[in-house]
Length: 81
Image (cartoon, rainbow, N blue to C red; front, side, top):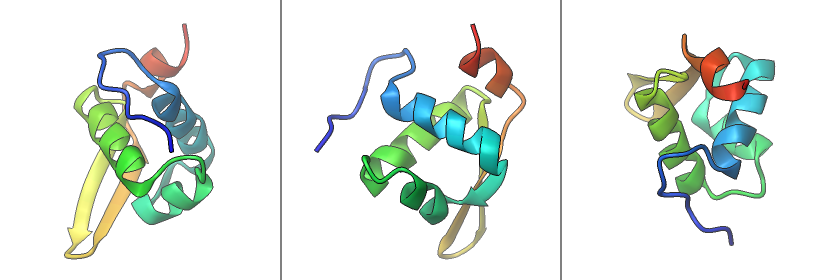
């Protein structure tokens, strides 16, 4: 099991999420978790939360049991040098 990155810089899970989201653009969190089998649901959700706080992703909660992730406005700044 991989450890969670608690530092302020982008870790492996964040970079992988940004790569997947460039391809998917918008998807339920569960679909994103399935696309990243090397990480736990908690690791992906916490990384999505961190990325959404930086504006790279948008995390929506359209219904009681559903979270949807969308590419945010800052994704280009975070994923490219």
